[in-house]
Image 1: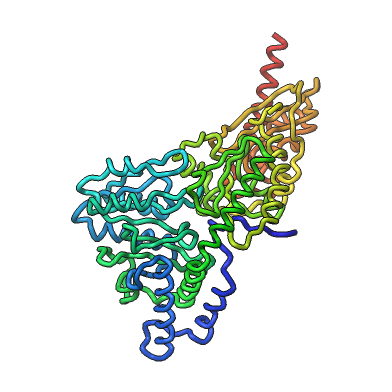
Image 2: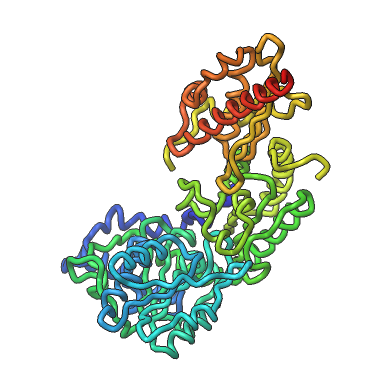
Length: 388
Length: 130
């Protein structure tokens, strides 16, 4: 059976070029990048080169890139690190209701320590309410953290506008760009952003490596204590092979973003059209246009998502109900709930997230396989009455 | 994730037994709500010897919800009402080769749907006698 992977917002297939670039750093070039001998210098050079490539992807400078173990660590470092560094100045943070749990739970942790957090709402398309952010700002506000693009529905947030607002008020602005980096262009030379989290495995790189962009001069307290690694902002021996892989993935992404946007937007919209032409009572979750090129999240009325995921899995098609990080939970999606989706319908949502590996034939296969699954499940659903 | 579905769960999920409605059901049990992600509606047909001759279901829910609905209908068919009342959620889960911990509530729902259907049957019977 042909396997079709449409869960690329959970993780992507690492590219062959990336793996090839990494392998020497597991085999011959296994030095510690902090060692002074030749083994160490080779590793150091590889890390420096990768740092330049990641900086280039974001149009940042090398000194502003701090490698981490992934997006979650980058978010933790940004939020707790700024909170620690600026706690004498203020104790208020603003974020929004549809953030990833790496941001939300970092904020919840700080709340336990006495910080105050405002969770701004979003509209029905998942766009954060800037007025709510503006009104929430107090002299005690030290950080605003709003994601660049949402992982479940793909909606792109007005980060430039929020960043400008933060800058006017002298407040740091962090953005969780884990789902956006490598998928849409970013120019941090022009964007009013102080901190930005990214993760390699979301753009065809390896798992276990990410980075936090920290604009020059931004005050931040390290969360790991140890050696003088990563400009003294993140202690711990560098994951050299992983970092090299991330650099390679960043270099490829920088080159290929424009082409990939065209390819994936086309496939994504083709899939949506196909689904809606064959299945009734389907609704798009997320912004109709201002959305990640690879993300399509739809809800099927009268149904529960997991039963759709399992049926597609039996057909070799991998999709998800939302975030992979919350699939162990029975709670309805906090993202869809914040968007005001009828609670009875949040359960029936499916996320298709595409990659450059996907083809039109893949989409045609899904469009062929999905309608009978939906019909069979609806026939089984007590919410679906005859004649509909 | 807290464990995977057993083969038996997947088999019942793929080929659920007794899907549908019984138009002249002796009792109907309705449990759950869509916000939690599970709704079960269980129909039973009971003959004059108090034997459940048929059972059908309609379910909105996850793989475990569909599999437990299917299994409970299989377990009660041919049983008398007192026997059926002894079918517990554990019996349903066990017959399915176990359920992941976070899905055990689906077996509870199946038991509640069955009890609901039996209660409905008894209430109707009493009303008919009166």
